[in-house]
Image: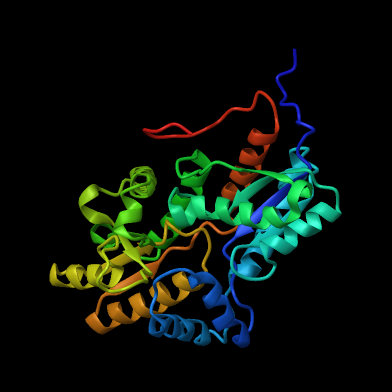
Length: 329
């Protein structure tokens, strides 16, 4: 009897769901107003973040990175015999989820698998996306397609392998005679402490970091999980330490070489480019420290292979649910 997974016929489409980003200067403030709607973030902070985008001409690379992802995911799905069309909708900027779902209804889509561009579980990285999808479905009433979300993949072996490759390439940029003393900082987006207390975000990040560093033989005393890109009121507790504070602490300890791996991000979007390539690099330069920033997984072949596997896993029968490390899929 054949063990080849059989494609289920009740899925009509794949829906890529991303954060979204402005693609010209006049988009920046409307985009940020969408992001911050209903959140207690001072306008001064919003204008400060707007300057980060203006520094790059008002263009976030995120939308183009999603286009690049779809371009390489299509042949991967074709290779697996998954001929479902791929749609794309954003939470905060065009193409907006509501518009994409309307397009899906016009095309006759009844059931879709949502691939959320987020590897870890938290309100902002998981449940909020579910809420956004449901909000986009409501105006469509009975015509709205049923949408299921693909599982998180922080401990999928191919995700770990892709991160290992990215980090190895960064470590190889450190001269060999200093490589055994280099300090590694894994970074992820900070979230409010209250949000963290009610999800597995830190646990999942910690496990990803452990699996990646163990694969490369980086000892525990030469690495740390730190955070970046916090927002909200300064008085509210968020996950710490911040990467800039961490750089200051490493300087006090006499560390000369630092490799930063933004393991909490899947692509080199604005918060990676500004908070790490600009601010963290400037802080290291000012302190006379050497810094290398590892690439995110982006369109790494192993990451794309994982995406194809997870999609096939969900839409087929008898598919294996792979994971590695201490926790199941």
